[in-house]
Structures are given as structure tokens and as C-alpha cells.
Length: 344
Ligand code: CP
Ligand code: NVA
Image 1 (spheres, rainbow, N blue to C red):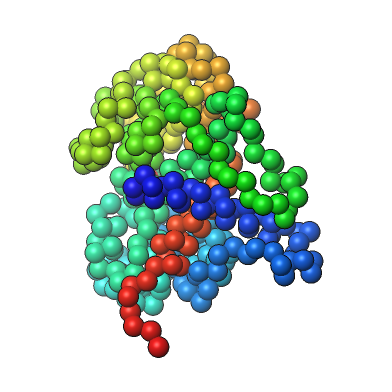
Image 2 (cartoon, protein in one colour):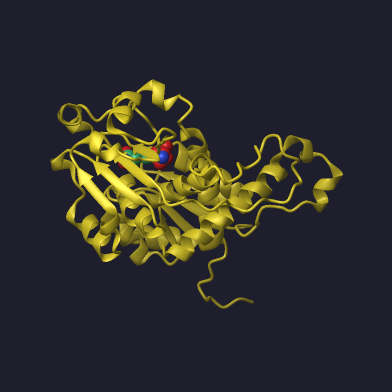
């Protein structure tokens, strides 16, 4: 996505989130005034999105299924135990057949090449719901969450009203601008970090990464980072304390991504000393008001309970925002997508 597309999607997600909060509020469910309320976009009305998931998911799946309902459509969960793909049928044939009946495909795959093949042969849009290399929808949720918490980084920015206490028919406020931040990532160079590397620098933020030397980003990811000119705003070391220095935000992810279970023992050894704790961030000199983010699911290895459940943590608003950003993507790229087919 280009920078204008990212900004547009974030604003759209925030707007739809506000409208949906009012629409779904229990006090509005039965009221007559609901008739005059703004509804979430209904761009998926009578349309279906295939959720082609070959790996587990809580957030991405629930976000996709619930947002498809809000948009007036339907999401079909097609797990690897359910369909012929991978056992009796190729990616190419599956893409053509599923894309012939659904209006979009949201796919969680193993190797990234599977997403590329799906996109090549699908007649409808394909959105990456996580692959071995990338997790683009996660970064949209992370960005929305950071914008919503902009007041934590700049005292001149007003905090947003708490959605649970504001009058539900208020006009949605605009998404606050985000000052340029220093974002530290401590842990494995995996799909979530890779999307941070190609996104945050283009929006003006600096990234400071710490991972053991043998776990640095693969060449194809780094080539893309350089191609986009992002490398100038990224520093990389093997020392977690160095990475958190001056950080406004500290981020981590599991050390053992889905599919790497056989490497667990070795990885636990290699990442020793990389756990995010108050002490690490104090010793490394993170800013006093640093906040903590994690895509979830989380293990205690990479972050302790004090940080994860503490006041710095914005992990649950971050998880909630998976829904609104996926809803914005479905609305813009599936609901409003037009393949130019002739209509009656
Ligand atoms: N963050 C994330 O993608 O979570 P799930 O694997 O539960 O979808
Ligand atoms: N890096 C993790 C992200 C999970 C959302 C994985 O791929 O398992």
C-alpha cells in the first residue's frame, strides 16, 4: 500500500469504528431513532469473502467474520481440514474456483509464494491475512492504535473521548495526527517486524531493532526495505538495550512463529536476554512514557506479566483494532471493488 492509501484506510477504519460503535450500542438497538442513524457501509451486501486459512487464528478470523457481518455480507471460513486445497487440489485451481463464487479472498498461508499464486490466479481481490514473510493487516491495526493514543506521546494532543462513555450519536471525531516516533522492536525478525520495516519509516518514524545476528530479516525482505528507501530510518543491533534507547514504543512478537515449533528449544536459547521488561527498558534508556505493543498471541518468554498487563500496555486496544482495519480493507478492496464485468 502507498502512504496515501494507508492514511486513507486508517481514517476510514476510524470513521467506520465510530459509526459501528453507535450502531451496535445496546441503547440504540431497539430505539426508533436508529432509523435515522448512520449505518456502517453495506458494501458487502449479498457478497461473500472466503477466509482461506491454513494456520490457526483468533483475532484475524474473528475480525474478518464479524466485520463481514457489519458490512452486510458473509465470510466463509475455509480451514485446511475443510477443503480440498493442499490435499487433492492445487492453489491455482482453488483460487479460480473459490474466486468464481466469492467476491474476495482473505488468505492465511504458509510460504509467502502461496499468496502470490493465489493472487495470480484469482479473479477477485486477494488480501494477505499472514504469510511466512509478511503480516500487513497487523500493521494497519497497530497504526490505528498509535494514532488513537497520540496524546501519550505529545501533551498538546487531546485524548479521544472514551467510546464507552461518549453519547453514541455524536459525530465521529477525526483521527489525531501522530508525531514522529522512535519505535523499538526486540525479538525475532518475523512477519510482523517485516511489515513494520517497510511501513513505519515511510510515515516518518524511526525503527530500532534488536535480534540475534542469525535471525535478521531475509534478503527478499531487506531488498524491499531498501527499494522503498526505508533503510535510512532503521538501525539494527544484537543488543536489546541499544534498541530500546530513546524509544516511545517497544514492540515484540513470539520467538516461535507458527510453523517453527520444531526449532523451539534452539530459539529459546538464542533469544535469552530478549524478554521485554521494565528493567530492560530502564537500563536501555527508553523514554519515561514508553508504551508496549504486541500482535498477540503472547508467551511470557518475550514479555513479562508486569509489562504485558501493566499501564504501558496497549495490546488489547491493538487487538480490537484488527476488526476495524480489516473492515476498512474489506469495504474498500472487496465491497467496492469492480472487476469491470458487464451488468444487467
Ligand atoms: N495477531 C494475529 O494475527 O492474531 P491471530 O493469529 O490470532 O489471528
Ligand atoms: N509471528 C507470528 C505472528 C502471529 C500473529 C506467527 O507468524 O506465528
